[in-house]
Image 1 (spheres, rainbow over the protein chains, first blue to last red):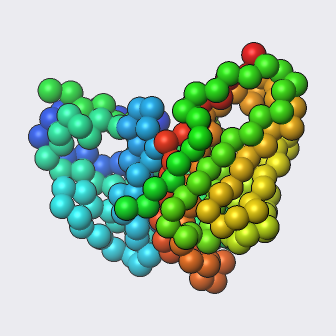
Image 2 (tube, rainbow over the protein chains, first blue to last red):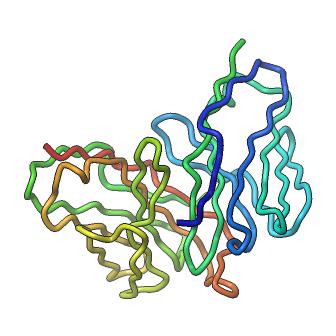
Image 3 (cartoon, rainbow over the protein chains, first blue to last red):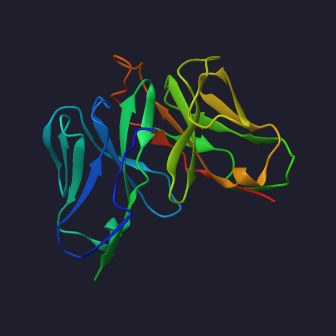
Length: 108
Length: 118
């Protein structure tokens, strides 16, 4: 595999900010994707970083450092509906490699 | 919006049966993928295809085969189902051809087929 690591589970409070980290082997990917997956549903695309730096999309931002093999997804103003799993994925050699996902629990 | 449709949401099959999982996409995407998703293991790639009649093994192809006779359809076949193939199966598609060996467009997933082999 490509040794993509994410925390298994996180808990945060409604209205707060949470950062979900993803680390991977630096010899790997040409960019990094983030997906959201609600329980029992298909993953849906959230963001893609091809260059280093921060990409902002409304309440969600994603950061990439290719030299460090590190990415994070930042969720602001958390809402209950943000309770889901968040998957990072890297493309390499005509494939996508996924992390195991981080289950985010948002509590009132 | 891209629509990726998997023929069954839930399936229950017996050990030794031949199982067909069907996936159809309506956006003329070149690339199609089959993953299985298991708790703690994430998504693991079984097979993928970047063109009609083309197929490539993913990371866990053993016990599976695929068929892509038409661009919009990618079928996953379990030749002889076993209990360790009980899982959630996800089909996905993406447009374009890899640039420098890498995709720069996201995957679009179907809703998944939860297969139980008893």
